[in-house]
Length: 221
Image 1 (cartoon, helix red, strand yellow):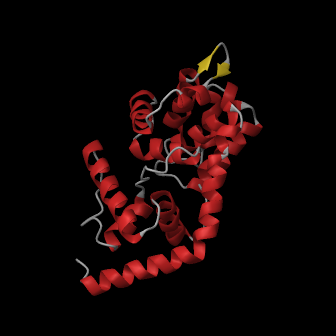
Image 2 (cartoon, helix red, strand yellow; image 1 turned 45 degrees about the vertical axis):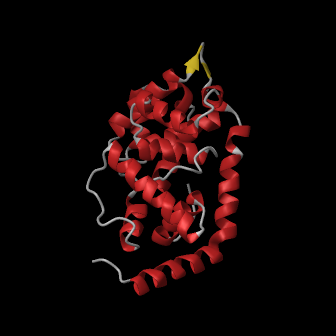
């Protein structure tokens, strides 16, 4: 049901008030993301693996799985058959274990990761996202945007997960929550969210974490 102008104004005001309460925590988190590329390739690759695991699984569960893989030295050296048992609480663990191994091969040469240098080779971040979607199996636009945001490169991208889409529907930014999203539809909704962000004067990256925290009660990844 479409909101009346008064109802929409009230909803936007409530969102702006909530942002005022959470702005410092959100911006602290975003600044932490911007520091990730100052760390080593192993840490950046861990962020990529986290985003490969997230489809239809909770962020908390996925980061716990990545942490287990790191502790057991499987993230950088494990075969899919060794990784999969550590993903028992992640949906589609068999496929995602293979995605991790394939991604590691994509960004490795002579046994060393070069993910950071690959990311820095793109002057245009939209072209980088396209490359990631086309060349990293398991990454769609949501996951690629999520990864780039988590390494400080995705401030202009929307991470259109179910939390965000529900909020966009609630605010009449979109008329319905799509069951599935094509590339065309993803980019259309992303542009609508970008426009809404400008309208209410909350930066896009901040708005994503604000919606996420409103749905989950916390600010995470």
